[in-house]
Length: 236
Image 1: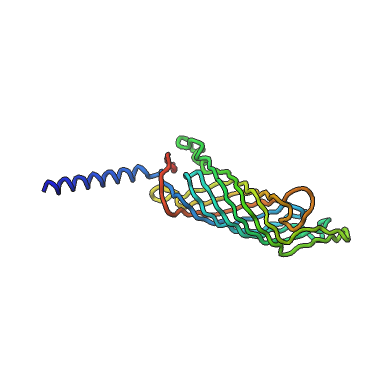
Image 2: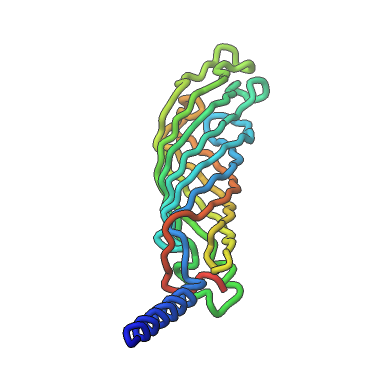
């Protein structure tokens, strides 16, 4: 009988402690890993004059050191285009399919500021900036190298290339919390500038400036796997 009473008391105490610990973690927990995807709208800057808008799709895997410090591996597939064979003076026009693979570090304002006492700071905590490194592969699907306005003028270049690039990114992450105040879904809006260490992404080798392209992206991420705790409350 005594053993039963002691066992019941210990079990009750353990249950109470577990409940207290669980309640204490409400608002502090976050998922260690995310998977997500986004769509992007591109604009290319290189050896062509007339810009054109193209699209891309991005798939990403995130390791979250904290809810506001993220290490991101991403794969992107899309198109780049620009130029006008008739109206551009040098006749340059191209379209290309590309894929890239990149790694980025993303730092959100919530890691650096106290957002617990101020509504504006609480709203700004999800602003982020980041940068990384990647490699981009492109394949020219159509190109015009000859100028109509200057007969005989020709711009050389490659129809396929692989280039190292640096993605610089700023954005905002809308966190959607579950019933335990854990951010399990994230809507991401970002602007990314991709600086390429080369001049043949558009198929033209001309001038002294490297190629680049910008993106406006809209995406969503889903938490999965291990749950851990942050040093301060995430949701206010």
